Image (tube, rainbow over the protein chains, first blue to last red):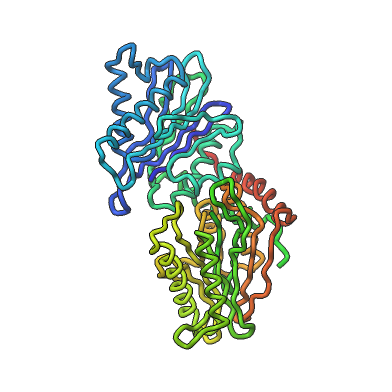
Length: 243
Length: 243
């Protein structure tokens, strides 16, 4: 499986993904699932993927190839005029790859499907965040639903729902997302460290600060250990029922 | 869907289940999923079910009928000599019901499967808690894995993993389980109030205290509201990353 979160804040967008892939529990590997496409000063896009690894790698490769050789009919992710068009391009590429595999009559146990989170900003528009489905359609984050999760989403959702605030700092958002990942990692073998984090600062049109949080990261360990105690204190602070 | 938790403590076993059933999102109903079988002073068993409602109701009805007319070859849940034999009886009944539906060649979209949590105590043995699979086999809770969840288990798991302690009071256990249910209910429409709770006091051989927590329960509302604030304080108490 996989776990990725894209979170819209007043000051930008934060992206976090794990790096574990697995085919069964006895075949796990580490692959980057967070990819960026940028033209500094003009556009910065970050894409995270969940699902069949052959599908998601093909999508990334096709998008990258097209940035090197494209024509007017087939614009690249580095030349489309808006985030909406970028989402459409990624969505069409994704659907195309899935169709190619499925139309040969091949079947994979887990399907060839994949899901994508795409976020960023292109000059002339605001920062936007999209969730792209394997069917090639997509939805956009909004004030009511300011974050998207893909992959193994359930364990880490309650803390996001409870503690997210739109005006959080990047540091707070990172802490929140680490807690969400920690809850998931503790419960599910298919999500694992290292994690990749990327902060997109609104109107900066660059995303050069990709952090990798390794398995022995001292801050992650402190958060993970501290959260158990903090939760217990929170638990004790609530009134007891009369039973 | 459904959400049920059975939790083993030093002082007994706590059972909690929701009551929502659904066939799609446009057809929801309220059904009891927590059932008890007892002979006060001699045995007390509690069963919770998740899965196809026709299957689980048939299992409960068959178990109840057999308590009224049984022979030596076919003991009832009120006459089996041990919790292990009770689990075997429930498991065989469950597999039988599923086989009956499946063997007619019928197919339901969501399958005829169901899963059962069975716990309690029969004189001569300790309190025991089992998780029974649709295949008719089962596992027992242990010191390392002192609780079972069935149904929509993921949202509510992190808080159980973090805050459970074997020597908790029933009041603390109820608070913990309500938080686990609240996290699930907030995230998933297929789990809903009212909730049923049952405390089994070790060596009491009775379980007459089934509580129903209605949608307007003031304690549940206080826990649900208070948890948001308590979590935020816990969140703020953790150190910030340097980003």
